[in-house]
Length: 304
Image 1 (cartoon, one colour):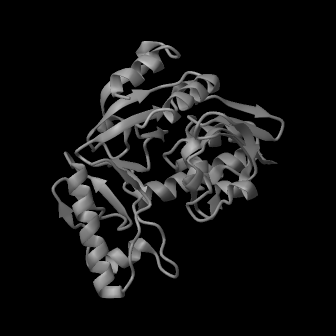
Image 2: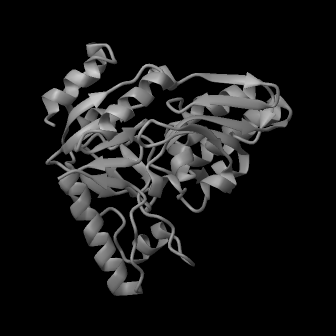
């Protein structure tokens, strides 16, 4: 089945304005780089998401779920497939007692601030992570000694083919370091429920302010990036290995190892995905040669 036939099927379920062809992924990625995707679909409800997934499951055409695009890099040749974007229809954040219920498209920063305003503690660590709730649960995102698995009560998960809809606990999700079972199953987070502790609003807000100040002073937040580029190798810190290898500030085209934090690859202006990937390969090879450690990207790299 070709793209036109798939688009026609999708239009039978979703308003055509939410189905876009030849989408520049640089506009949907925090790196501000990368080629075009053949098609982007923006479901407007969980029911529409299921219908989209059921259609795509019956087609021999690649697709993937996209949140805020803060952990993805599409190669310059583009993505010969369909992006299913969990956009504004999934960005609701509600407080229910000591729980915060978030749609998969909601930003972590918004969830953390909403919790703080309600006097609920536990999500402060997530206030500066630039991703969406769905991606954060999928990756078990973390910062400053906090992780999603410590505060997640359950996630509403839709099966890859759209046929099943259930809640899963952190144990069922097998949440580990930047990993969940969803990496293997391909199932999709539609909603997350966080169970938090009652706290003092001023103290919670002060903690968020402190973490924000620490992040802004140590991380290159003013440049496009995907956060920490590499996973933390066992027994090491990726940024320190890169720095100790003498690679801080190294530049390829518009891509650079941040002068502020060597764990970050940043777009200093006009970087292509190829620039970023060439720089990544230099870092991997140099660190391997000098320290015998293979750095593994935390960023998901797709496309051709």
